[in-house]
Amino acid sequence: MSLSDHMESLRKEYPGATVMSRRDRDGYAIIKLQFRPEYKYEFDSLVNFDYEHELEKFHGTLEELLRRSSGDKHLSERLDENKLQAEI
Figure 1 (spheres, rainbow, N blue to C red):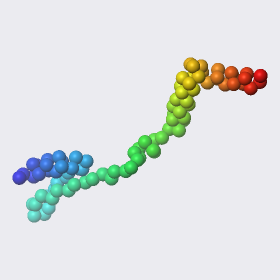
Figure 2 (tube, rainbow, N blue to C red):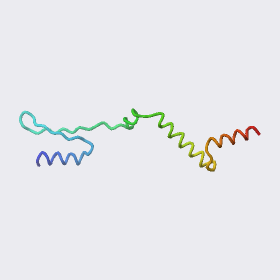
Figure 3 (tube, one colour):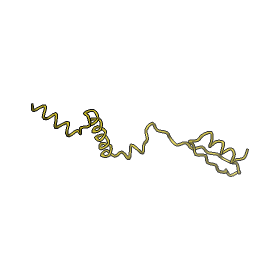
Figure 4 (cartoon, rainbow, N blue to C red):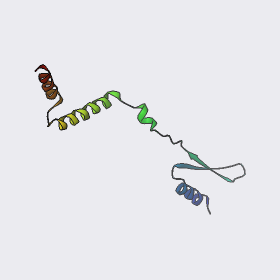
């Protein structure tokens, strides 16, 4: 089996690994498999978290839920109705 065939079979067997090769002083091939650590959470999304954007999405979702549950009335209209009912 040639070196390139062996490296290709390792790439198929370990799809998440980086397969590298080099030659030692005697000319023998040394193959190195390098694995990246797998984390439970996606680190990049935690670092790049935009609180204001997520808060806007949350308020938009909440507005939509309240609109659908109140018969297509906006939140401000519903709050105004509640104030009127509380005054009566």
